[in-house]
Image (cartoon, rainbow, N blue to C red; front, side, top):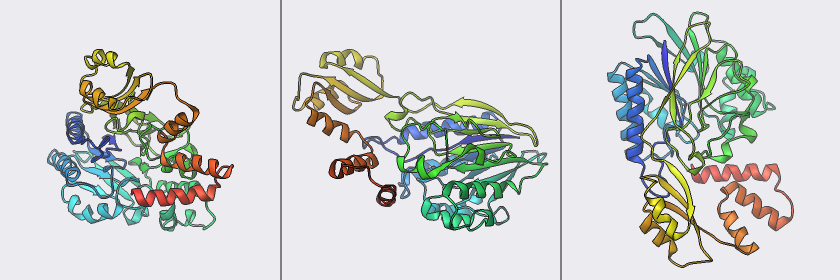
Length: 384
């Protein structure tokens, strides 16, 4: 049977306050077109359908329209929430979307309690068992692991607990079905795309490749925005990556989805299909005069501009945007004092790194792991 693996759509995300709805619509259209053209039997979405838990109506419209079109084409969808999604919304919409062929698994469940979703080929000749593992935050880990006796010890680490959940899911696999893991998690060795939420990448959330069940026909992963194969896994495992270049850390990445041919007992065959529709993100630099030439080459790309000057020039950013209307960030490139350089470098850091830098400056030592963990919890609460 044929499956399409995608994830990390982040529908609703803006870039420096600018809407990207048209880009998302075009890219999602591309996904639906590939699913139809390749006659896939199902679409697997590995989490982060939305960019925010409180999703705007426009994001709902784009996603629901795509799900309806897939349903009308006879293509079911299996989806799990990622760390940006609201599991309660998935649960609320679950029964309704099931009527149009979309199966949402909002939280970790035992295989016999809804953790496994079965999909068949169009002609009914083959079946795939999809073991669904939504994103598990540290706060929700105890609840998730309690469903599996092998992962339920209060002394079990996050990594070992998730490994136990994956192992428990794999025990329901059959020799007569294609056996798929659909999960939103971070595997050690994966290369982040650059646009992910830092506090859920690496550290306490890291899973070893050896934890991925070797009996899986294919492991469809979400969370990392750079498309890639997972090295060290004992079964074919890949991150589909994000649908658009979501921030400048992803500016050099081509976006794609995977179409997978799976047969029980055999390694999956994977083909990559590029996704079009997203605007490029580019870094450009030069003097004000150079920008006129640059404007002729960048098309509609969003830009991060390093403007070479002799010093501070009041109002120069407005002048830059007259020449390059899609300049989102404008930074002046000139020799600075140490104090100015520190201020600029701090502004470029993510909040977690800013806090750690402040703590080192104030206390002369690195913050303790427990303090950084508390910061992560508070930051996740206020940005969710």
